Length: 82
Image (cartoon, rainbow, N blue to C red):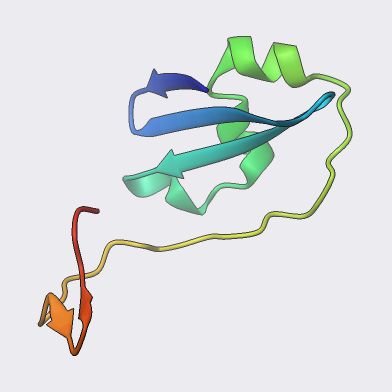
């Protein structure tokens, strides 16, 4: 797994097949509403490595994910970590 950082952005690149990787971008701040490709452009080395690659799927998840919780447990389920 490659983890790359830019101001307000974390990029995670994970191999999922012989010639396929998963790319996750975690973005905070005011720029969070930009598209995947706009965020990817903020990580020039990664954008260059992926240039010309076809997308295997559409964006599969999006936020906003910042939420405050009232409880950290319900029954036999407990919220731990992020």
